[in-house]
Image 1 (cartoon, helix red, strand yellow):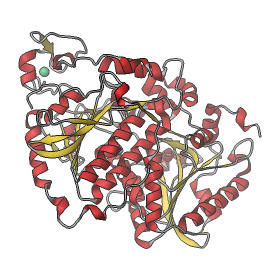
Image 2: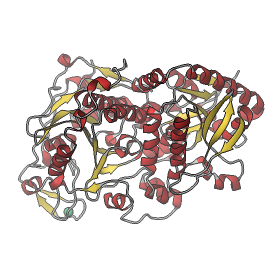
Image 3: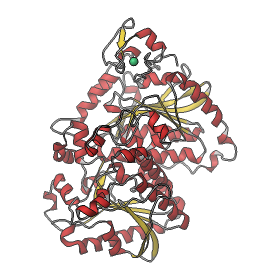
Length: 288
Length: 299
Ligand SMILES: [Zn+2]
């Protein structure tokens, strides 16, 4: 494999490749009887997220995934895989639906990020994402998520809180797109390759950081060069993870999920007595 | 031991904030909204609200003045940020940025947490410091917030979060993103014992923090005129290629669109919070007892 020679920015290009398999390709390959369910029952239906029931390895599961398009027309319909609040609220409805019927959840992550538009703000984009994260935190069925392309920011995490997180070899997952980070930090989105490198966004980085649980190999030129092999390998890995999780009782599952997320983060715990000036300062005096 | 651990704590004079420069107590401060000069003593008596109604930004320590005098006990002060990604770019070195912000603010990260009382009602509190790398949430911020929520749940206290932030901290990458999951995860503990989370959103409040704990509180309060949203205005303007209306993403806009509960002027905040604390008081003792809480998980 020459994969290690690829830079983070190269991987971003592969992760965004228009011929890369998208959510519905995986669903067609590894599921049967996929039945798409539509709408958030509040405002509308968002084609940037596809969701529905399917048979997967002998079980009924709930599928939720970002969906990108392959051509201009489909990309407009799918909003380039950038969900609006109604997309996240459709996902929320179906997470709760899955819990009601005891269906495990399978999430496919592939988005540049949540839609940044006036109407998305008016309808509470931040709240839509936050509610999903909260509900997934306590959802009483197994959740397996796989990053198949781009995992962009809160827009990805909104369907990404999971008991197991898999990533394709050349997929990326980051706090903001490299362009976004470059714009936030340096007001210069042309510095995106620099940001991609500094941000440690590759599947290999995420595995080293303890966030990705497993990596699925891709052909040398990327998943699109031999989609059948990747779809098969991903299906195999997903079946294996799901089978393991389905053996756990619900309380163990939830306890493991809590502790998995609760321990993410790196910090120092200095010894207080060695510190100078850590005695808490009194609140500043304003006459509240 | 890093050099900044030995720094002398800086003194906080309420009058130094909005302009970022030292101004003696007997001087005047220019309002960044209307341009009028405010006499510092009078401005402080007015909780740093200009005569025009503009609510100037407060530091985290100034916000702690909402608590009853001398009741604040800081927790988790010993947590300190590290540099998990060894973040270095051509324009930015994280360890240097941390050291500068620690030196300037006297804090070691962008969130101060602990417990205290408001009109005698006990609560846990977590306040962000916007002048520390834009109040951004990284590992220390997320850990302090999660611990505050867990302790509140253990002690059956409500949680008050006061937030001014630009979102997740870029320099800790995906670890910052995951703090969104971690903080919401911890809030499920509070929900499980029936204690409320009150969120006070102050200017500005954006992005990853608005897409996590701040927008799923049981009661969401904002200060007049505070900018609140998910996507930043610059990003939206670049995407849609037009100027945004002045009213867009203000606290008042958020109320109109049903996204927050109320806009409360600074002078009424303490009374409002005290009333809420009284209203929710006792809900924990009815039929939910501490024994019902799943045993604390090892983390
Ligand atoms: Zn003014």
